[in-house]
Length: 625
Image (cartoon, rainbow, N blue to C red; front, side, top):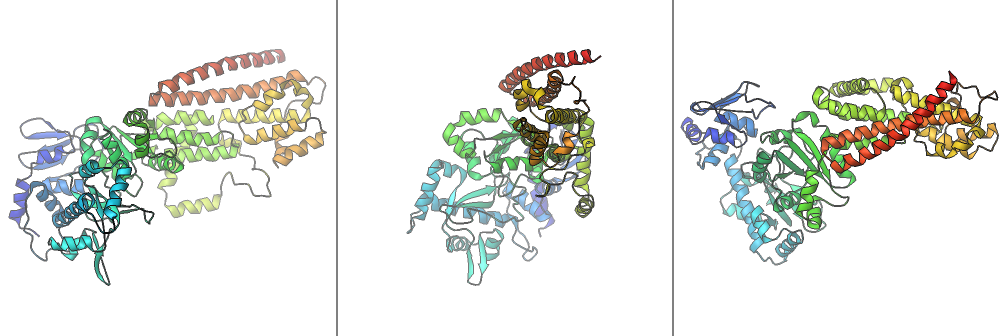
């Protein structure tokens, strides 16, 4: 505890407007009255009021209010005493706390302990020659990664020898065992206090104000774990704190953009290359709490710089789950496979990295496009499952109609369904997410999967329920089944169209497999052709029984066969054109001029061929009339 006089001294020493101005752009509207956008909730207008004379704040939007201590408690997620200590440290005031009043060491003492540890680690790295040569190997390790002496000095890097080296030093400096343990620099065991970190290059983790609140340690050999961070504490939380935020916050506010990477060395490499709005997550994926921290600095764009491997792309899908929790535009850059940001900078240089960042893709479209590529060549049932997955990805936007509208058309075109159906599935996915997990599991067990996975005995996926697919896709499927039935019954009529059939892009991948089986067996008997089709899909007989054309009479021949192929190709190309239109929409969102030009050329070519086929189909229909 502290006395009321000590508390008042800390409050009076704090410039409230300057404190708020660290994260909020304030405008003075009258003597001593300052207004800005609230740091505690997302808003577009300035409803956050700071009265400099009275030392109070109030938000007319969310109702947050209080004095400077209340403000720090809320902004930094601190208890009362820790908020007072935070302000005292900021104002360089030494508090005189009553002994025994606190359940543990104060924030100020823990930070002082961590700061002393940082200085000790740095001295070991830069000046010490130890008997085993470990400090020299640590220097060589960092130099090999372009983290030489000057960089190490700027970032406060160090080395931990361990084996009691740090704890002995801290005790000599007057820190108690409780303070060392509270700072997670030492661990008590049966043989006394021992160092928490040893034989590791040390990266100090700082809060937004620049105080050391923890460490990340990286081994210089093959030991495990490779990385070891300080444990979560009252000072730092891996789900909330971001590495290099103290250095990046000014650039984030100035540029309206933040670049997020996955590790300390990547963040350092970007800053050293002049990209100073970069921060790193530490030992976790990007979280909603990280977004809340970043919201203080009002970035318009959050760009995730992802490694070019499968793990990096999976990370993108995790970030999409947060899409409804920030007003910032989520974008991503995927580096060439096998390179992390530091390696890419080393190989290609800062200019190449800046160019890649300038071409950042819309993160949601990136993830959707990856999922939609999986749907190409998939069966109808598989496509329906992928559509459900895609709608699940968009579920966080169910109550954000403006944000959602940018993606609904993209998905609807890709799956040939109507936008209303996509929106309804997204709402269903959102309701399922909000449901109690036990209830959701119970419903899943009672209903089963609509498109169940094939068992070995099936030798084929069950036929899908066509009421669950869009009108355009249903029409494509039925036309394809008509063509397959005719090909099975009268293969000789298709002799002029064999190449076209072989090159078709089928709505249902199983149709393509059946078509190729029929083409291979076209010289065999009808029974043998049916057996060949059944060999690739057990449901082939049902599919081949779908025709309504009369193929028994002599009037059915090559013209009728050509019409069926024209019709299927026309619908396939119309579907492809919708896909190109969706990709064009995505390219326009991301501003990719080269991609736009290529897609416009592809669109023109498709439209020309579609016009030819439409003329052919019209001619057939006119003849029928």
